[in-house]
Image 1: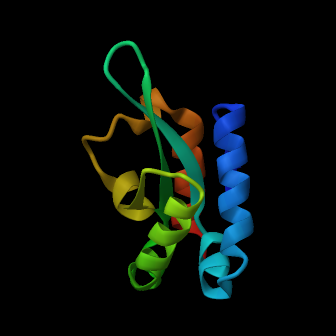
Image 2 (image 1 turned 90 degrees about the vertical axis):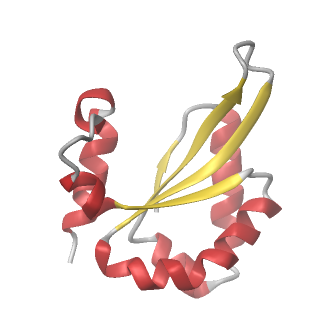
Length: 119
């Protein structure tokens, strides 16, 4: 599981999620082949309402596995205080001709590309 941390709070939430996921071997194994990060979302301009959510970038080959484990992942995420879980197909994201990911987030793009090309 690749960890990308944007703040100490996000780092702790991600560590807690990873720890709780160990109780579910299928979920833990699946996440080992994904890029997982906490995304900080704010409502309003004053950034008072912080909503952390889990973002999982998975390779095409794990599409059915992710779909089958999504309910468990959502429960685990809620347990550690995450507002939502978003699962994105890395292969589709890399091939999207309108994506600005490469320009805006080059490191993330590189990670997602690596995930998408793993066998």
